[in-house]
Length: 190
Image 1 (cartoon, rainbow, N blue to C red):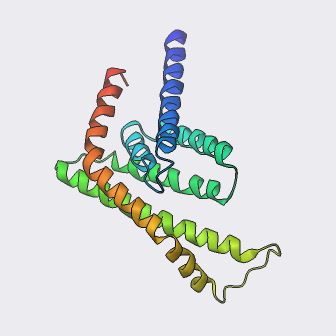
Image 2 (cartoon, rainbow, N blue to C red):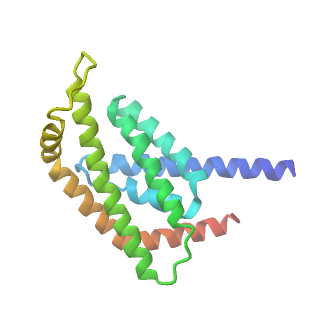
Image 3 (cartoon, one colour):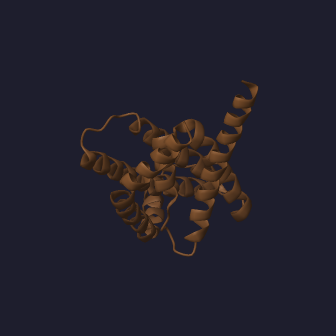
């Protein structure tokens, strides 16, 4: 029994580390192309098939590796909000028993697009707030939304690219990736 438990723990750590490595490698492979990314689809598929117990530790490891590579800044906090939210939502979607495959793809794609759009809003809102405060740690809401509009408009081409990228990725690869991971999970006896 102890050997079996140790084997299961080792398998859990190995799978979680593999997920974190795929997230990091996928992010790094596409780093030269602004806002074309595979992190959303990978987190969604991992959480959908494997659940939060595997996805969340992989996400934390991924975020920490990114922070060590790119430095700590406000985006680290944004990642700690956004990526676990993606995992939670897709883990919940993974609990449904879909009767129609096309509906599964449409819902996954729509959810991914909405989450991606919300990421643009969240990052713009946070960046506006942080830049507004300056060094005096006081805040005045008088023209916050005006400044937010400017910050958001400045990044609209990046947000649009990310939304289109995720719409195409989810529509074309979500189901094949889910099937592949389910076969792998079954093959491991989990």
